[in-house]
Image 1 (cartoon, one colour):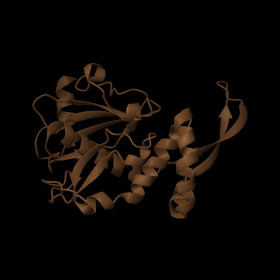
Image 2 (cartoon, one colour; image 1 turned 45 degrees about the vertical axis):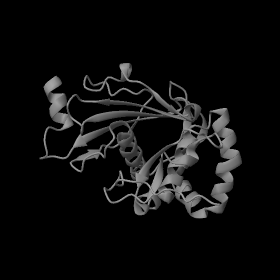
Image 3 (tube, helix red, strand yellow; image 1 turned 90 degrees about the vertical axis):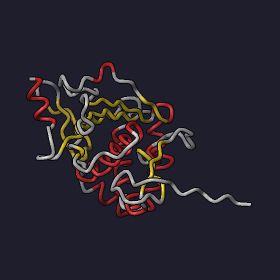
Image 4 (cartoon, helix red, strand yellow; image 1 turned 180 degrees about the vertical axis):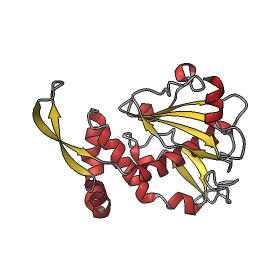
Length: 231
């Protein structure tokens, strides 16, 4: 007898409507392991879950390409990602649209060769970063990120640190998923659920994104207000 899957209870962590499914945070296809048993899922409505499928694939492509100097990731690209691209010419065309050739130069400015580079579509990446942060917020706080809050644009960095007193990641605990394919840190401005900081790390530090949540103007103290007070 086949067991029916239980419908998730509660509200969609992204929009607040009744949840009818579960979404993986981050998108499950970024993981190098075939069947990791510690994936993060959050309650979601079907519209929010399915509405970013192409963006999920684009995010996976960009993150894995950035991690191609990792042997495990490189093998996964060859085994899984390339066949997927051949089946999805629309996604491949979208990615290759940002391809260009740049010069390789010495510190003194002498051109010694060329290499391929890609201009990523930040809006597409941001949509998935927002979902990741909202999903992790729900996982850590047990509630949705409030409607008076929003996710700021992500910053690519080589360390989880904004260089700001209100966001010091040094003492923040790392939460690891799938053996380190993804891990994150989370910190919060005291007594304010809107103002949080997140360090998102993929493939053991190959790609690191730093993200902050903030309060919409007119709904209370914003991050700029708090940082101004601490300056």
